Length: 364
Ligand code: NAD
Ligand code: IPM
Ligand code: MN
Image 1 (cartoon, protein in one colour):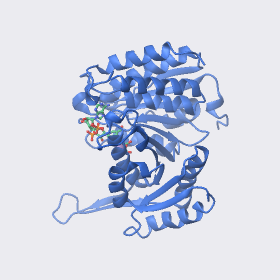
Image 2: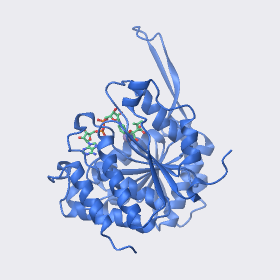
Image 3: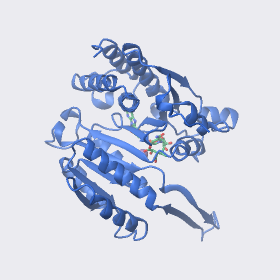
Image 4: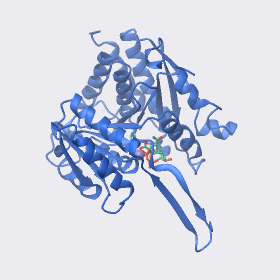
């Protein structure tokens, strides 16, 4: 068994899974920027492209090779993902096995989804400034509605029954709630809100309530609150400035993070990190494969590039991470963007522009 923390190995190997649709387009730009940062700061990064995608599945019948997730765990420090989803694979089998397979198989229990407005012009809400949208969603990433437990009875018949189970464990809830509080404490964030639907989901979300009540006692300096998710969804678009850290379950976190993306300028900007501290981690834009935009040059690569910044930070390359993020902020403020943000650049022109800024940045 591998006992060496891959994060401490040199070189740090990074698996690049561009995936499907615009995932390929934006990942090409993310790799350009990552390579520029690697060169600028002489980072010990080794990028390895893996073909796992719908195309590969359709051509070979294989989603992942046998032991694929164990290889990521043992041989890679991080994984960079584009997106999965292809109309030719309607059941999303490859996405379930690769993306959810990695989240579950690597036990990446934190889906860290920062939501930050870099330029007030990009916010669809009236009168909001940059500082009004600056929160992080801690989405539980290994259980809830995503466990795939359930089944169909009398499938296709008029009286068909479908059962889809959720799973919430004390360990699973406690570790994500604790991760959110610890992050808030380490980053000087004062407010933490837990969102659930415990008024209806008495058992699963009742457990969230009880765990949250116990854990919050250990963080007296943090103003902890609870909101039912319907009310919180409303508050997010009414007064996003009320939120610093939101912690919630897998499905609610998925939905809230697209609302969060809208507040910061859309899915073209929203980045994420799938983490289990000390282990191989996975970085990806929040958006999907948007098949109709694939290869058009319209896909915004910024979400993927901000995911690279999260990767650099996690791998210990703080300066490079800040420079990549700073270059993105400059591109947004100068309007050097794809059309979704009002600009006229193509996907690769944005990538080139950002890679040049990173390559020309002062080293320290
Ligand atoms: P999507 O995120 O792919 O696209 C929704 C819309 O958002 C697009 O039509 C486009 O208008 C906009 N958009 C998204 N990313 C953009 C970008 N980078 N630049 C500019 N505009 C962007 O969501 P969808 O259409 O619901 O799903 C398409 C496929 O992707 C489905 O198969 C879905 O299951 C999959 N999906 C995958 C992931 C993932 O791999 N992490 C995430 C979400 C959806
Ligand atoms: C996301 C996506 C995924 C999810 C899908 C593609 C499985 O929507 O990363 O937000 O639901 O987690
Ligand atoms: Mn999603």
